[in-house]
Image (tube, rainbow, N blue to C red; front, top):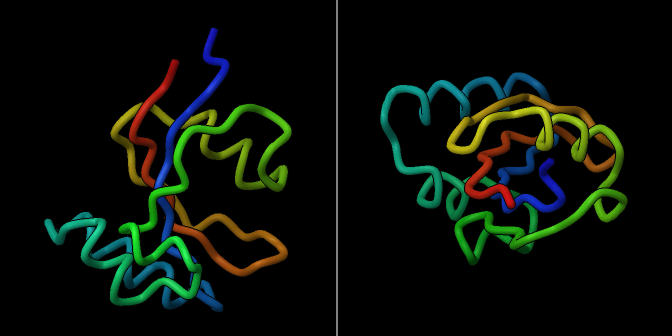
Length: 93
């Protein structure tokens, strides 16, 4: 059972922007580079990396999507109170 995951994300204010960013990544652009350019979250300086976290540490919508995704998957957009996220799951343990 997965107890912790590591994820990166890109946070934007609207779903249209999130879909455009998701397409850029699916078309081969580097996730970290896109995060540094477009994310409104302070984690952008680290390429969107949020580090390791367990259940109960993120808002429910983000956590449910991240824990449900396979390692290496890029998913989204996921709507939370902060905006729309494109999430990349980079580790599970």
